[in-house]
Amino acid sequence: MRKPLVAALFALVIAGAGAVPAVAAPAPAPETVSAESTTATTATTESSAAPAIQAVDFAGTVALSNCSGSVIRMPASEADDPALVLSNGHCLETGMPTAGQVIVDRASTRTFGLLNSAGTRVATLRASKIAYGTMTDTDVSIYQLTSTYAQIQSAYGISALTLDAAHPTAGTAIKVVSGYWKRIYTCNVDGFVYRLKEGGWTWKDSLRYTSTCNTIGGTSGSPVIDNATGKVVAVNNTGNESGASCTLNNPCEVDENGTVTVRQGINYAQETYQIVPCFGLDNKLDLSRTGCTLPKP
Image (cartoon, rainbow, N blue to C red; front, side, top):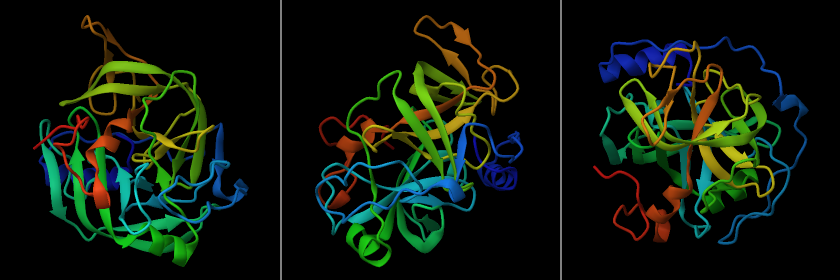
């Protein structure tokens, strides 16, 4: 898991887990971009159409108390819809969900620090609820905010990031944008993992990075952005730290034949295209919608 040690300890106490995640030192990683060196401008007015494509920066990302995240929209989201924030299931303030647990429509007043293109915190956004959260098949949390996209755009000039409705492609140039550390990692999609196992959790069809996306604690929940389209294709969540197999902070890859592969130092994300069919009119979650394959409670 890619979140800081203090927050991870607290979450594990809440969840009743017995292991303590190890965390990499927060030194700047090579092949990263700091907030100070980012110069791209923010996106233009939010509407039902997707924002114009431009260089990837920090605009629309958020910092959580223990993780990273981003304000996201579905391709069909409208300006007056309540905005959504994407992060990891293991970043929930209620603790890490157990295997098989799915959280839906749970009240929350969690706050998020909204960043502009330069990585400067310009606002505090507040959740009204956890719309969805799980660590089963994927590792995702989606919060509904008290603000609409139009309100955020009007007050701060910042547009939401759009989720790509299509499965990502191997070889795609990507950036992992951490609002917690104000750091951007640059690499490519190395490939996909049939099953990724870490401790008691199993994730399906995970995205594996090439080695230069050497993410650290606090980058959990960072959006993974396609350089060419500017759309979110995945959410950063874990990496193998010490070379152990299938243990906490040391996920292992399992193929269709059950063969286990360990890649020390390699990091992973969970794809987000499967989220899109599960949200309908007014950004309402409906797990019974056609094409929605997210785990149900």
